[in-house]
Length: 122
Image 1 (cartoon, rainbow, N blue to C red):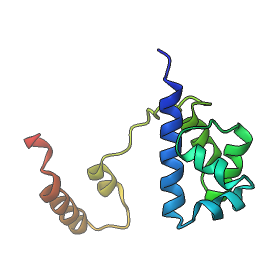
Image 2: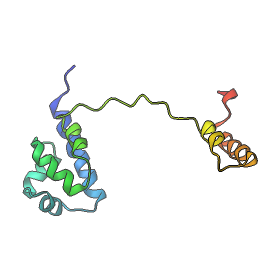
Image 3: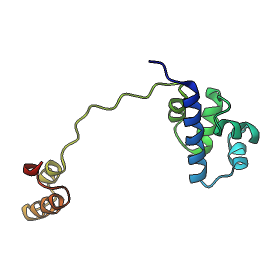
Image 4: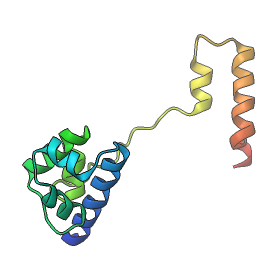
């Protein structure tokens, strides 16, 4: 199933705007950091222009984010598959921690279960 490239552009623009605002940068400031024109950056954020990989790399550098993330948002790269590693459960991590006494372990498990419930009620 092919993805709609216009959705990719809108998603990329929204992401770039969120990142820019979270870094408290104006369009002008980010365009200067990335070495691109202010109007061009505005068009990218509005989903009107598709930036090249090199422009995405410059934007990533200016925003201090991964260029790979921007490539995925732009539809240049596919999203990496979710890791299929199983994280240890909280209970197992508490039980395995050698720095905790048995009493501390029991107390932590009681507190944890008070938030999420115990396994027998799931």
